[in-house]
Image (cartoon, rainbow over all chains, first blue to last red; front, side, top):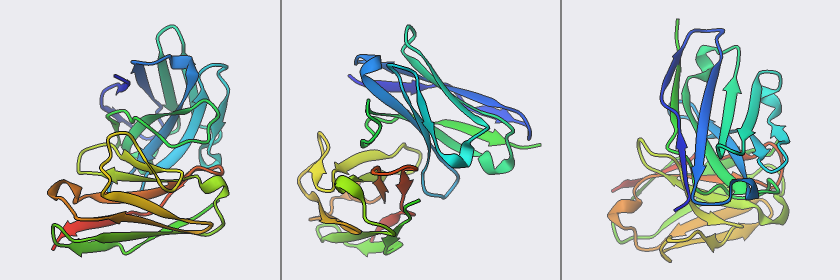
Length: 120
Length: 108
């Protein structure tokens, strides 16, 4: 079955970077995009960006321009999200989710989420 | 950026009753690119509806979606115990994709 499995929880200090992985299985990896969505405690989900896993280009929310990098390794069928210069406001759950290759689609399925905690 | 506003914030409903959730957009959403997700505590969001009114695979037909332009509705007919959760609308017609602030459906 189609599945996205994310890496484990992270604890980081302010100013550090975090890299979260998302391992895909059960489908042809390069036929679908991977989106990244985060959710702070008690808040609505917030879309961060997406990657066309076939050609590798990305579209990022302007909010994260300059400190967000989304990449993929097609041989490993894994996508990565790296967020730098972390602050306490970056604490929350980070999810990957599959979308169609054109970028404008609903998100299904979602990974289980990776908890990122930023604290001094 | 399209801002999505959901109402009400909390909906108290008895099992077996109908729940009607609203999502209003600040600008018209192109191509009816609206989805609804259900989220339970400690879980990732789960897709319920896409393109306003299409049910995702495995979603029971007590869930239905409607609307166009800037006003959208999710209706749950005959609430089951497993339906008590938070529901988010999302638009994916323009960037950045945005989500509403959520409606919590709780047991009355």
